[in-house]
Image (tube, rainbow, N blue to C red; front, side, top):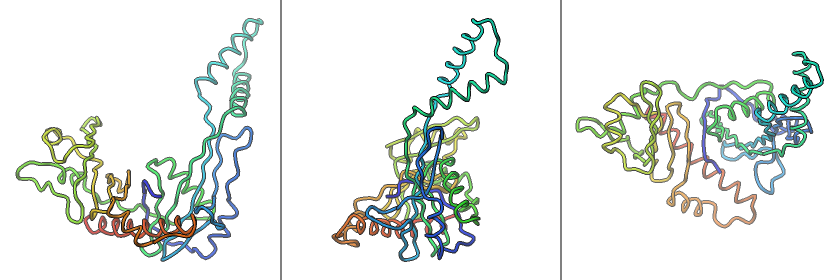
Length: 294
């Protein structure tokens, strides 16, 4: 269910009227000349409500529909139109070109095939946290904007701004005098993204950490900005310097625990509800450990 998690602290939120408020911003598909539309949809298969809540955890799902119009295609058509007008002996004014560009863009929009993206939102009222299942800041901000419009206001703060840039690097460095061990219950994974002084990026993927190549980069002033970790043998994920969790994957150990916890569900609704509560509860413990470490 969850594959990424960008996190914020909730300064306050009243969930009592949440269902009614979401109903005012339900998803409506893009109109003919509309480039993007977003709204709330039912989060669970077979469900009938726009929210699902249990044990202090609430799940919402936003649907974003977008139609892509390549700027290069619009430019080509506009240049063709200008050339045709000049061939007739007239040079279109700036206003005419703008109007023609808009008309061409609308024509492309009317023919474009919309693409849809579901984005889950997790509200943890126990820890007063808000999570958006996305690795894209733009997508997360779009969904937060929808939530803000839905509620009338949204009091959130950054999850944390206290991560020392050297922390992930120190965990990864294998020098003899370095503490190259992630604190329990975290273990090093097999993925890291490093950034150099001139913003150059290096990626280590599916490799044992620490290793000589990564050590060499670190010794030359390169820092780890994303690090693959394993939490308590249950969750594999990538932790970023902005405290986002990317590439979340529940291990076989966690999957077996989930099967034991939710049993044999009678419907897709029960399966989705059980999966959400298990994953939300597990991630809540993981995030609490992150707060303890940092």
